[in-house]
Amino acid sequence: MLLLEFSMYPTDKGASVSEYVKGNLEIIDDSGLPYQLGPMGTCLEGEYDQVMDVVRQCYERLSADSDRIACQIKMDWRRGHVDRLQGKVETLKAKTGRDLST
Amino acid sequence: MLLLEFSMYPTDKGASVSEYVKGNLEIIDDSGLPYQLGPMGTCLEGEYDQVMDVVRQCYERLSADSDRIACQIKMDWRRGHVDRLQGKVETLKAKTGRDLST
Amino acid sequence: MLLLEFSMYPTDKGASVSEYVKGNLEIIDDSGLPYQLGPMGTCLEGEYDQVMDVVRQCYERLSADSDRIACQIKMDWRRGHVDRLQGKVETLKAKTGRDLST
Amino acid sequence: MLLLEFSMYPTDKGASVSEYVKGNLEIIDDSGLPYQLGPMGTCLEGEYDQVMDVVRQCYERLSADSDRIACQIKMDWRRGHVDRLQGKVETLKAKTGRDLST
Image (cartoon, rainbow over the protein chains, first blue to last red):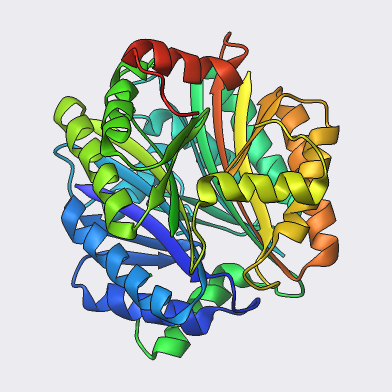
């Protein structure tokens, strides 16, 4: 399964962009894919085409409203591993024996 | 305040690296800075020198044990805004009116 | 036009991965899109679907040969601007009045 | 040696930010470190503290002039390897046997 974290935002709208990022979160939340919103981006889990389709929808929506968009994506694909959205964090809690902040 | 998300891991140790990333989480947890561990990295909040000191400690520890290290960092600095580790996510929940998955 | 920089590599093959990254560069070079290989990734210029198709081909090839893959992508889309692969660097040379190292 | 690629820019200044990024390039060019400016960021080569000092200077300069800054960094450290700014690209040219676009 693929974990993909991304953030996508306009850079021509001034310092406050949550009104635009809001649209991305609606697309992500409607996608039906497992996801986790964090302070610096959103992680999605799924097959390559599933998660990339969500990224594409966000791009299409934002590029309709903006003149310049920045996007950063990180992917971590691992054969045969599932439920990684929770699993990677749980592994680190177990390995450290600490109730890490999540 | 600065939000900094980073992931740092050896790339010469095979597919499973949690034994090495464990050391980073201990450093982060011991730093006393507010942080949030996620599936694709850890977000820290603090002044530039505070968060960069944590990154440096992780680098020193990992480079002692590895022959090759990859690291990705994203920063979001905003003048006059604090408690952003929680605040950015709360803003998006409020704007969308949805109980987004976090 | 969209500028997309990406690097994609297996993390289960030890410290040296150029044998695997070689396949990506062949895909990129065969794509016919303008690109620039750099020390930390390759920049492509094109329409969203064009550049994303290249990324997908690299993913398919690497995931056939590897058990774990890491990928980082940065995008910069700007309405109405073309030839940005050269243009952004030229603008900075002109603005600084320096023969910057490229 | 460490290869570090970064881009840092204000997000509160509208779509055109080269006037601000210009200052970063002057800092980088004055640092004396080997570097390469590309379409999506600049790669520096050096010891950890050397390259991080350049990043810090850019942060200090930009944060004096801006209300919000975005920065993305990628690092690739490899024990015992030097001249990697040119070397990684040359390796891929040799492996592919192609005159890749650089």
